[in-house]
Image (cartoon, rainbow, N blue to C red; front, side, top):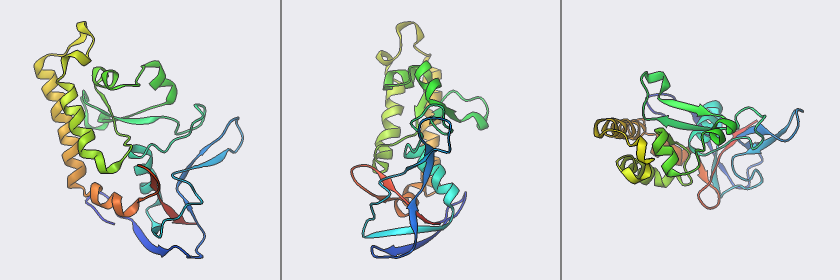
Length: 200
């Protein structure tokens, strides 16, 4: 799996493979101990055709965290939050924002109106096959005045700039072949979920 940004080496496996594998994961669990693995998809589930990641585990885990919603449920654990596209970024390094579970709750980021008003577009997808619908849905929503508080409706110019940021992000994902490669690296397990196995 290759694109302009990085590559990963995959090894296709059969369902009856004896290779010791497990899904990519983050550490979760209550308390302050070592925790338990929170897998990206049911760890015991193996589709008939899947891929072991020989090289690129960190990149695949990052994709699962940003686009697939892989996260710890315990707010005290590392990686308990979500990633957002900052449609108001001033510097390119601020284009993607990570917010912890507590920060998301504090900002009440729990619906489309809140996302659009804050100019923070969620990157987590329920179904990677609907990424076009996701991005274009937010491009449309940014221009929808009723989604903003009455006293916080941005100017036409600011809304257009935000729409351009979202469009540019979508174009960048397409250009990097992320759409196609994710379908190879992430085998679907169940409704709208992803699973990925790697060599221990």
